[in-house]
Amino acid sequence: MKKFTVAALFTLAGIVSAGSAFAQTKHEVEAHVPFEFSVGDKVLPAGNYRFDEVSSPISANEVVIQNIDQPRYTVLARGSDGPWDVLPNNVISRGHLVFDQYNGEHFLREVRGPLSAINVELPKSKAEKGAERNQVSSLSTPEQITVAMVE
Image (tube, rainbow, N blue to C red):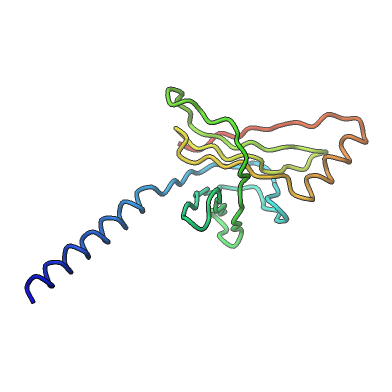
């Protein structure tokens, strides 16, 4: 009976320590976005946002985007699976957001955290592809806007 109890305690301790190790890998960053922007089919207002990468065996490359002041504006976005540039280990960055802008509309494209803590590239939504087509037909050039993360 004592052997069973000791084995159960070691198993429980292993589960608890694994859970705390998983909790430590949580990568949350914050930024102030000074304009309304779209993520997928959702339009989010300007404001302070928290970006939290979701990583599990079931959901890779996903990020939860939540307005800190108005939590009802929360979106779960799935990033692209394709390869893209990752900051080298020796490059220190505060992190930033990259937006594509077409005719005054902003679409979130990338979330890059400090020291590669969170790196998600979002695919173009149908709305963004439509805005891109309209921009091309109007012969004006699209822009990319970068917003720094809050330290």
